[in-house]
Amino acid sequence: MIRRVGNILLKEWIGMAKTPSSLLFGGVIPLLLVGQAIFLAWVLPRFLAPGTIPFGATAADGLTEVEQFRVLILAQFRFFVLLIPAMIANVFATLSIVEEKITRTLEPLLATPVRTWELLVGKTLSGAIPAVLLAWASAGLFVLLTGALGWGALLGHVLTLSWYLSLFLLTPTISILSFVLGVIGSSRASDAKSAQTLAVVVVLPLFALIAVQVTGLVWFTPLLTGIVAAGLAALDALMLALAGRLFARESIVMRWR
Amino acid sequence: MIRAAELTRRFGERLAVDGLTLDVAGGEIVGLLGPNGAGKTTTLRMIAGILAPSSGRAEVAGIDPTAEPARAHEAIGLLTEAPGFYERFTAERNLAYFARFYPLQDVDRAVGAPLDLVGLADRRRDRVGTFSKGMKQRLALARALVHEPRALLLDEPTAGLDPEAARDLRTVILGFKHEGRAVLLSTHNLTEAEDLSDRIAVLRTRLVAVDTPDALRAAREARVVRVTATAWEPRVVRAMEAEEYVLSATDAGDGIVRFRLADPAQGRPRLVADLVERGVDVLEVVEETRSLEDVYLDLVREEDS
Image (cartoon, chains in turn yellow, brown):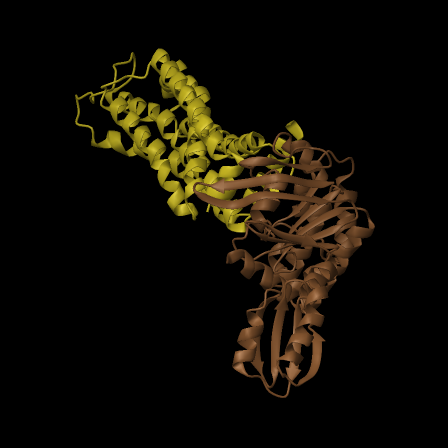
């Protein structure tokens, strides 16, 4: 089983490395999101009227109003970083499945001893693992850049338990959800673009998360982050079960066009 | 080696394959002939364990592919209708990817031997995207062989190939027979079926006929007798057609009438005697030689009617 899943992983990763668009996408999206977060934290506090503490920011000992606002913005990066697996895993999934459909490699593949669930697991991991690693690398880059800009003292207020829970629990669960939705979309679509429309289902709620956090409507405490992660894990299991049905041999041969 | 017993498949209301019973022994090539939509690909898919039969059972090397697909796939080599390769990968990497799904000790050797066999060893490190259709088809055949299967299911192996590429591929397929493999070959190409197959199975949703090409032809050839006479009166042709031993009489012009007889052995002497009695000046009586194509078309038409 491990050999067969490993074979799929290796093939998918070599394929990604040979696809300039996936390399570009995988490299550009994390840099854009890190850059955007840093830029917003740098520029927005300049427009803050003196004496005001923005809605959603919390008073912290020894921090100026500008720093409090900057902490508020920097803290949102934990949600920004979730966009990376949401978008990248979905793109990798659709490219992978649509390629199989276009090149008509699925039927010869199904004639080998590979089990369909091994195929699904291999494909899912091949997209989810790089997406998670890229998200974590982006978080590392974000911390490095924040320190380099002289905001190191603020990091203590940003890198909270919730931040780490979000990074290590939400990132993998969103990555798997996004990839599986990509697989489901690809099973019916004939090209990558139309298959990627399902990514909206993952990306839009993430923007909503950022919005509710910034406005202070909901504050993502460690407990709430854990609950959301558990909910996403349950959703992953549900979606994997659905994708497993779509990955039945007969369904692939007869319905995937 | 390959066995189909009352194999049936429905897609909703549509019956794609109806009660197909067929055996292919080791060292035998059986050609599966039939028009588009006759159920050839569905049959191969059911035997390959990709589609489950609605009823009936398939078996390859004693293994039921529906019940134990992974084990069965180790015994089956399937050449699909479309070759299907990762175009950015080399021929070697494509084959190695598929080969690693089998319990093989030496994947490099498993890939090298079939590439040699199909004449692509010198192109092993070229990207498949640069290959012609014929080369892809040969590579697909090599892929079907990486695990040295005992049974081969070949779906239209030479479709769309130029005559030279098709001939090369046919030579390779004939070699499987001498290696003791069982081959079930689906094709539209009647000449190919005749050249390669020990037996031919004509499929039109159900199995219409199965026999050696010679036996199929002989059974039909003997039934048609071509009679040349100086002249034919239409009433005589009609009267002959009314005889119980004549199935049909067709005036082909130029003094020729073709008679299809129910029982050629008894019918021929009676036919000549009756014609002479009716005053026909018979010049020549010839049993028609029929091509496999004629036989195939007859069988399909009869099945349709």
